[in-house]
Image 1: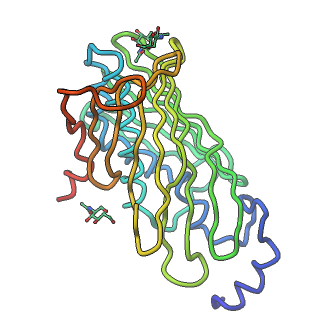
Image 2: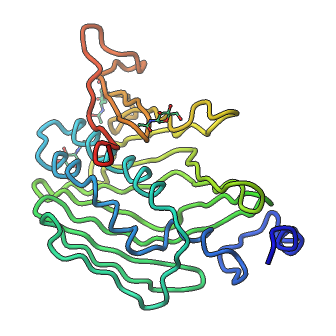
Length: 261
Ligand SMILES: *[C@@H]1O[C@H](CO)[C@@H](O)[C@H](O)[C@H]1NC(C)=O
Ligand SMILES: *[C@@H]1O[C@H](CO)[C@@H](O)[C@H](O)[C@H]1NC(C)=O
Ligand SMILES: *[C@@H]1O[C@H](CO)[C@@H](O)[C@H](O)[C@H]1NC(C)=O
């Protein structure tokens, strides 16, 4: 089917949730359901190992959230049309000490479940999405749950990723952006990291920018985090206004794309 006739058919769905539409190109639903890709997020799992080994509770949150940010780079890179069938499983055994297993548990709407584990962490995900079709683009809201347990101290972190937008679905070259808040919460203490993913502006301005803070349970900022999710993240201790503490340094915590250079 050519893009013009596709456009005529799809126009009536503007504003609706199209997750379950059979006629949707698989590529729209795909970012969250490709089981093999769910395993790719383990590419940066050394950041979770570091979080587990880290003594400072706030730096622990910095490492764990940098891992969560790196996932978006892994996803973006692996964008290709492919939708797993119901009951399909994917298993990766002892890949650098990590065992990963995932299963497509529902086809319409697509829901996948995954579990990964090594000596430092347990990662559990149920990926499920809600969509809003906007014509030439679709907003994809994560509705599933992601939970990371750091084993040494039994820290349980709950992750809510930012929404995703797939642009130029029908006209032009399709590209993906993540914009909005990502929140990672220590479910025991209520400490959290809130990172804001800037939307991509005209001519690519602000693309990949991400900024935010680690907050303690009374919502006082402790550490500021800034960077680009295609490059690296850095952090610096801050005062309760969120300003860097004089004399402290901005330190790089993760180089996100170093594996692909
Ligand atoms: C998170 O909670 C655990 C207890 O489960 C605690 O030991 C740890 O220090 C907390 N981390 C932060 C960043 O507050
Ligand atoms: C959060 O940090 C502020 C400022 O350092 C402190 O006054 C407050 O007691 C802390 N809250 C918790 C729950 O640790
Ligand atoms: C990351 O994105 C920015 C803005 O689009 C770009 O200038 C930069 O070259 C990218 N970095 C890498 C390593 O691809």
